[in-house]
Every structure is written in structure tokens, then in C-alpha cells.
Length: 364
Ligand code: SAH
Ligand code: SF4
Image (tube, rainbow, N blue to C red; front, side, top):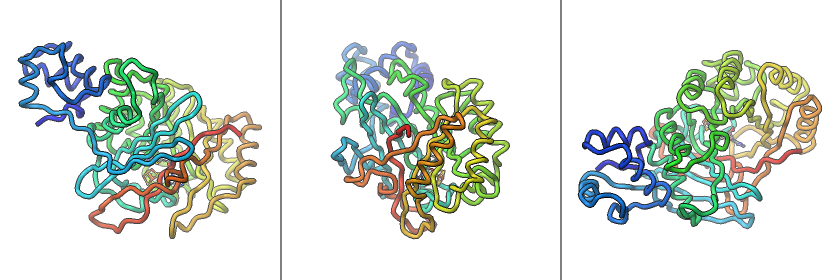
């Protein structure tokens, strides 16, 4: 059985064409699945009965299954989604006054092993399918009570959950295309963000195939330190990463890249780092997003003090670089930075508590 959640518009049109069906039929089905949240072909009343019968034989619409659903006092909502074989990933909805952001996972675990990241410490299990990625948005819409023409509850999507989205390129891009498609979720490119640790060739591919807002996990302003904190830097050093960011901006929906910067006491929060961050901002139009580190057992790092974070934000802003600091949300349901506990059964390594960042950005 083919899960139709795996298809973006082009793939669904191609699949329909193989069965002698016209493109508009595919778009109709896309609309039913993603706009109306329908999983029952019989309910798709404007689709010919014969086609419905054929679809029932060969296809299905199967979203991921939530195995836990928690709501925080501040409205943050967290779902644990079963992705089979004892693995689960998290999806978090963060409501704010003027927007609602869904934080979506792309992999069960992550192979890139950044020093400060508990997802990385869990090891890598597998890529999520396109259905499992877009299925997080499909399901959150349903569970939040979205209607096809009602007010939009989820206005922004950030690929900042578990995993490195650009290491699961094809499935992530299929899901991104559905997020943007008017027959599906119709989000603007500016409101869909991919966060990457810096896989340079994949940043170029994303620019060519599906440019959306880009966030880069910088975390260190020089190669020596970044090689240690974000090991993918050994393969794609800062110079190459910054060039890729500049190339990306030629086609990006926004005219800046967001650099995420986890503040680690005594590691990347000294004055020399501040100066290097200012130099980088002269090379690439960017905004900084400072993230107070959330510790986990045996991480070996401590969070920079609040005055240090404030000082960094203030001095960067004074240097003319827009800088925000993330605020923790949902900590009473373990949905805050460093508190989410996904489940990854790694074949090679033992699991530690999973850390994921669920936050609110706030200008300082
Ligand atoms: N793999 C992608 C996206 C997932 S990580 C990336 O690295 O960009 C999402 C964000 O959570 C990243 O900015 C990451 O640096 C941050 N993060 C990871 N561990 C953290 C921790 N212990 N405390 C705070 N933020 C963390
Ligand atoms: Fe993977 Fe991102 Fe964590 Fe690095 S920070 S290990 S790339 S999820």
C-alpha cells in the first residue's frame, strides 16, 4: 500500500499519471488530505467513485501515531510520535501572541554528534520518511483543531526538532514543498525555517530546489573551536560555510541568515569570540540568536551566566547586528530546552536523555 502522505504535489501527479489519471485529480486528493485532514477516500465526495475504489485498493493515508500529548501552563504542547521499532520523535507547538510555531523532527537521533547536543549523544537510528515529517504538521493541525478555511493556528514551521534536516534531504524537501503548496498548507517561504549544522553541498541544493528561511547552528566563531563543538566543521570549515550562506541569500526568501549560538560558559562566551562574531556578521548578512545552553548529564558544559548572555546581546546589537535571545517555554511539561525525552534505539550506542530546544525568541 502506498502512503499518500509520502508524496508532494509533483510525486502525486506522477503517481496518478502512471494510473492514467489527470493532474487535477491529484491536486484534489492533496487538498482533501492536507487541507481537510481526510484519511477516508469515501469521504472525498467530489472524487469519482471508480477512482475512490481504486485508491482504496492501492493507497492509504497514514499519519504518525502520538503516544504522548502534554500541555504546558504557558500553552506549549508536546507530542511524542511513534516512528516504529521502539523509536519515537518529538513535535512541539509553541503558541505566541501573533504566531504559532511548530518545531518538527527530521530524524530519529542524529549522526553528527555535536558536543553540546543530547540528540547527537543518542546516536543515529534512521531518517524519517516524508510521511513522518509532514505527518507531524498534519497531525498537529488536527489535534489543535484546525479547519480547512479557519484561522491558521500553525503560522510557522521550524525544522529544529531531532535530527539534521539536510542529512535527510529528499524527504525533508518533499515535506517542505507540501508546507509551501497552496493545495496543502500554503505557508510562505519566510515562515518555514530549516536549521542546519552546516552541510555545505546540501545548503546549495536547498537553495536550488526549495529555498526557505535558513538558520545555521554556528555555535563557534573560529574553526579551531567549531571543529570541537560541531564536528561537521572539520569537513566544511567556516570559510566554506559562510560562502554557502552568501550564495544561499541570492535566492532566499529573507535577506539574512539566522546564526544560532549556544552560550557555553568559558568556551565560546569570551570577548575574543564577540569580536569574531562581529567579523562574521561583516561577511554574511545575518542575525544572531543566542541560546542559553541547557545542560544534560555528563555534557561537560555549563550555561553562560545571564549577565554574560545579556552583555553579548547588547554589544552585538550595539555593533548594528540584530541579536535575539531564546527564552525557555513549556518547562513544566519537560518541553523546554534540554528537557524533551525522545526515544531512540541506536544500534551502536546507549541512549541518554534527549535534549531538544523548544524556545521562544525574544529581543533583548
Ligand atoms: N540539526 C539541526 C537542527 C536540530 S538542533 C541543527 O543542528 O541546527 C536544533 C537546535 O537545538 C540547534 O540550534 C541546536 O544547536 C540546539 N541545541 C542542541 N542541544 C542543545 C542544548 N543542550 N541546549 C540548547 N540548545 C541545544
Ligand atoms: Fe545533530 Fe543538530 Fe544535535 Fe548537531 S545540534 S548533533 S546536527 S541535532
